[in-house]
Length: 212
Image (tube, rainbow, N blue to C red; front, side):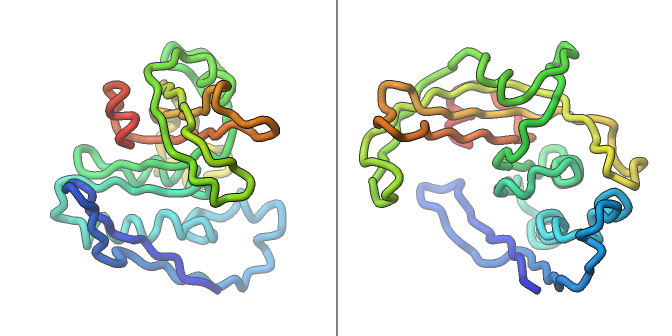
């Protein structure tokens, strides 16, 4: 088993402050059925291990952060789940920022079906940001990396594996931010730095994308 916790950080001031744990989730791996093909399609997210991303976040949103002006839930790739993106954002009070795991088939706002990675790559660059790579990671050489920023919005369709379909919309709109290293700063033999992120927050332009 394990414990999954949500860390509360306030970043609206000059220096970020860490206040501690805002939510906790305890999980005990005792179900051999989860390795069976039918388990995924016959079990709601509340009964899956992936609920660790939704459960403590809902708990902290509705209790600890009930009076907060706005909360942004920052999550790694395992949270790239329709249920999380559908249930956690709350109009005007909470949003999500999730590292993308899947090259999903999505729809553009004009209704065209596309593969996410290929389509975001085709979007125009809205700005350049430079970051310092320390070189502490032996796989990445020390340098000032030049990163291209791209944004777009997409419709995500509800997964066929969701069993309680009435609880979820058929689709939802999410924004995507891609930050990818420009060819001129990629060292020989290295792959480019690239981050792709889902967010439910509106992105007005370059400054907001860089902030997120």
